[in-house]
Image (cartoon, rainbow, N blue to C red; front, side, top):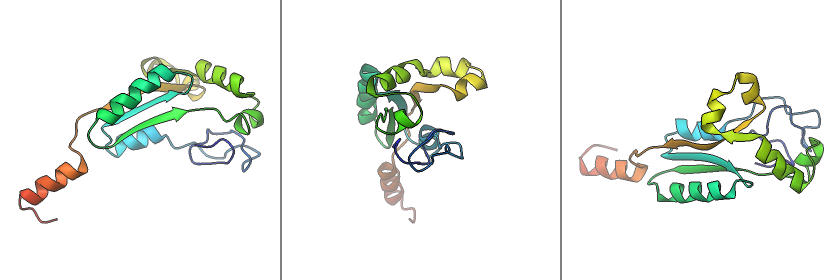
Amino acid sequence: MTGGQYSPLTPENSMTSTSRKGTPVPPIDICSLADLAGANYVARSTVYHSTELQRFFKEAIRKKGFSLVEVLTGCPTYYGRYNRIGAGPEMMEWLKKNTVPLKKYRQLVREEQERTYWRGCLVDREMPDFLSRYREAVQGGEEI
């Protein structure tokens, strides 16, 4: 995601260089999309929470099949300036204050959820990956 230009991941009502009056639509939640697409591992964290992020990357790499780790990071050059968050240090503080563990996020009321980002592991499952399913179908004599 970039904070300089509008993208489908840009937070709603945020200003960017290409959406100076704010983004007009809700963002796509890439983690939910990966979950719906059948990813075996999906997690989100921030550059501020680097130890947590390291753990998520290790867990994702160990999974067979598709994994996604979303990393929330600041863009002080454009996003921080346009949205009055500040420069690099202020954006790191913003990430610290505006993200909560997934379990806590699920307990928040909707209005609080709209102002907060969750971080944590959303999906951790053991589904066969595409290649394993393909090999099984070929060996089983099914027509592909």
